[in-house]
Length: 217
Image 1: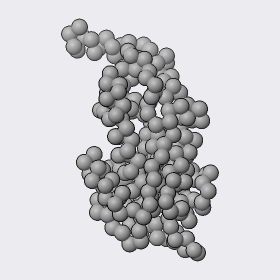
Image 2 (image 1 turned 180 degrees about the vertical axis):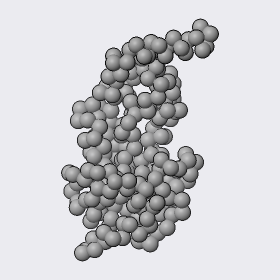
Image 3 (image 1 turned 180 degrees about the horizontal axis):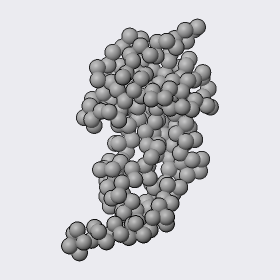
Image 4 (image 1 turned 90 degrees about the horizontal axis):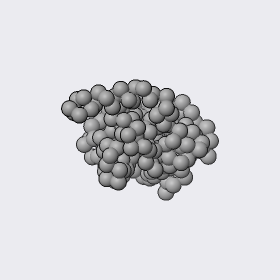
């Protein structure tokens, strides 16, 4: 359950601005990992704010606009598929979060990081497991990151309609894996995430046969 007073406990000993940061898109086969950082005003209450994964797309979009309007500062950043392949998804996620914090118009005195790793940040930081369902500023950041990445996937769908990005948002669904197997990867696919093409070749061929039979081919 989201605790609207959680962030306040860190505002001690000269700490005025507490920032929450979170990412979206660690698991997909394609597209960037997107991170956001957000500083909210003291005493603010945003009804319905919660972990982005628990909200409908319509609710996330509404909250996105409200967060952008009411935040003291927010920034959205990313790490590209090429960077993910080069340094791995964990490091790329942390890199994107650091970039989002660096881009804030107000630099925070303390950072709350969703997850269990808080290394490499310039400011004092604390990892909060399940932070997007606990901390108001992390929840806000999670919505900013999720909505932004979903919008990027809709743009990818327009550029590469054969993969179905609008529907699966890049995640490794059966349909997405089959599309990559049939069409090959596009420039936005993370090459380090495509080992299934060789490892699961027999399964993919079986899926293709099943799809052909279902479509009467």
